[in-house]
Amino acid sequence: MTSVRPVLVIEDDDAFVRILEMFNRRWKLPLEFQSRPAGIRAAAGARDRYGLVLSDLRVPGLEVMKELAAFRTREPGVPIVLMSSLGVDEIPPEAQAIHPEAIYSKEAIIREGDRFAAELSRFLAADRDALHS
View 1: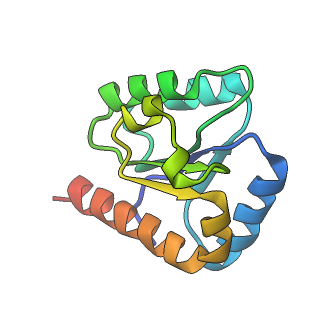
View 2: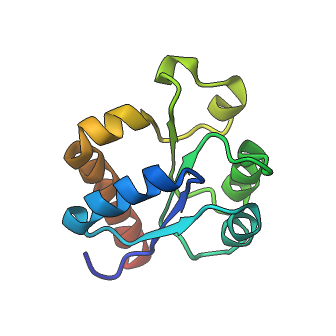
């Protein structure tokens, strides 16, 4: 993929980050990982930087949904995809309130990695087309 903005990945679980990095050797998506509250706040505060946000529901020391709601207000056209170790039917109301484009369980990401990557690629292609039109 060329000329696409990176994917901001908000994930504090180092083991899951390593899994995503391993999968990404094949996917070749422009993933940019943030795992600490200060880095996440700085990244989420950037304007016109990201083409997609992929976020865990919970990060210790950070109100993730509050940060994502503020990001959604600043960058309404940037898709937000949530991931959780909870079942997708157990997603809390505050996560639903930001109107994510998709919600994935981490188990499904691992099990259906290529389908998940294809979905992210579609979001990035739409972002690229919007930037170049």
